[in-house]
Length: 115
Length: 114
Image (cartoon, rainbow over all chains, first blue to last red; front, side, top):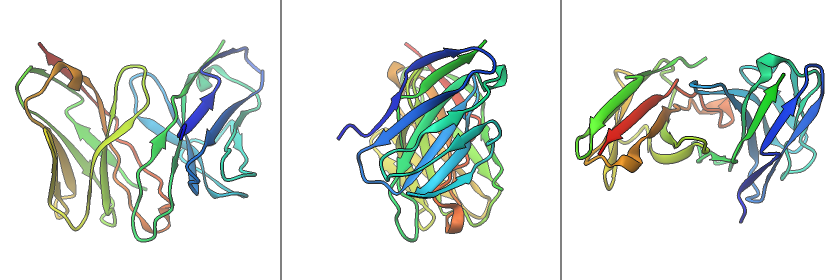
């Protein structure tokens, strides 16, 4: 298993440009998440999905959109990039387990700079 | 939502010493308490977790203790080594309709000096 993979690893955008961060997992996990991590800070949840076709907002969703057409893929879309979106983005997934939580597995991250 | 605080924010120890990081949470419904380690430039990885029906769990040099009454849990690292240097995050989980969403603490930077 490759686990959780993300592309690209690095990207520089100009203000106002758009891009999609790709995330794929091969563990057949129901739950998937997008976090951002600003320098020296913890992780903040942007969006999450509990299964194909179902997504919901997290703590910091403004400026982002997501879709979940398959169990494996959970892309994150930035429509009009702003300097405040400069961050490292992590995708994660976990298995749905009734009654309690299962481990979240993280991808390697995408380092995004908006200039 | 859940309020999570970690203390200390930075911790510097000599190799071989012990290190303790405390995490305080607000949601009394929290029932799962993981600790993640993030090395510089890497992804967060789970190192140990504990469920609400257990008071302590050990895995070699790492242990986690839980005090549900006081709403805090702690990470204990004994016989620290330079490779333990990293940022450590707690991320209590409230269960129910939280759909696996974790609320991360702000992190503790641990530095182990050889």
